[in-house]
Length: 119
Length: 113
Image (cartoon, rainbow over all chains, first blue to last red):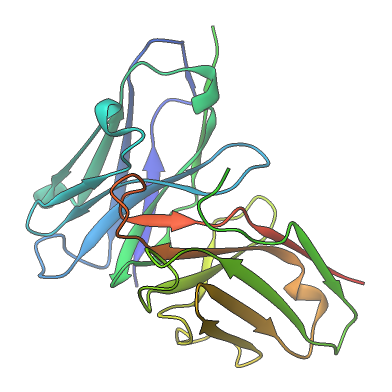
């Protein structure tokens, strides 16, 4: 059974760096083909893909946010960490991590964590 | 503005069929068979309903089906049920260097009358 759960601060100030952790179970990020991605959703708005990390440490980023994002993995802890620098109120959103279940598809999602950016 | 275009809302009565469209370009929907559909109930995480245009994950009702023609993908829900009322998002792999790896549609709110 695959499960994922996001954790991190619920409130950050503008210009601060956000660090989110995705802790998962039911699969290993050392297994060929496996990946974990981050997707966010501002309140009342659409989903937006942010980043993806593969089992072989290959990484993909949204071009519009690439300069602000870093995704890393800790295989021994079954965790994936996303950092986003220079946070702005427009970054207020629910942030989800998800298991890459096939080619370009996310088949298992975490419950999401709402991050509010406000001074 | 999302990379893939979906209607903002659709509605139907119980038992009816509805179709939600998802229009992209030859760099995403039209160029690859990597279109997925997600269902999202209020306050919940998205749930994968269709992948690779027309494949259903285990456990998803066969009332949900997907197809594609040119740059437009479609999700059809037959035999509408009250529990189908939710937001639906399409996504696609994209080869566009300006969009990245995966793009989502703007979402469609399905109302079951």
